[in-house]
Every structure is written in structure tokens, then in C-alpha cells.
Image 1: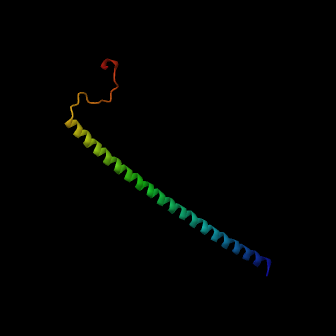
Image 2: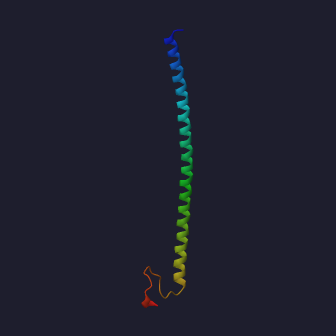
Amino acid sequence: MSTKAKTTLAGSILFCCASVVGVHYIQLSEKENLRAGVFRDEERRRKKEQRKLNMQELKEQTELHQALLQTQQVSNLPSNEPISEEDS
């Protein structure tokens, strides 16, 4: 076999091996990306469910607050203003 043929054969083998290794690397990275997508979806679903529970709890607390305001005598409703020394 001539030197030119040996060089061509070696180049073809190297190219083939590099292609196989490259394809395997791409497949592994795609598999990791898909797995990360599943984890992101699970986290998104968990947060959505938590928001839903929080909104339900807020609604229940608001209803309870309104019911308590109707049944109990409240002299001063709470405000967001700080208590001054004159009020004490």
C-alpha cells in the first residue's frame, strides 16, 4: 500500500472516530438538557401549586377577617401608620 493510501485511510478512520465521539457527546448533552427540562417543569408545577394554596389561604383569611369584623365590636381599625407618642 502506498503512503498516500495509508494517509487517506488513517484520515478516514480518524474522521470516523471523531464523528462517532462527537455524536455521542451531542446525545449526552441533549439528554442532560431534557432531564433539566423535566426538573424545571416539576419546579414550575410545584411553585404554581404553592401559589394556588397561598391564594386559597389568603381568601380564607380575608373571609374570616370580614366575618370577625361583622361579629365583633372594633373600636379602632388597624392602620399602617406608626403609633405616635400622643396616641399613648
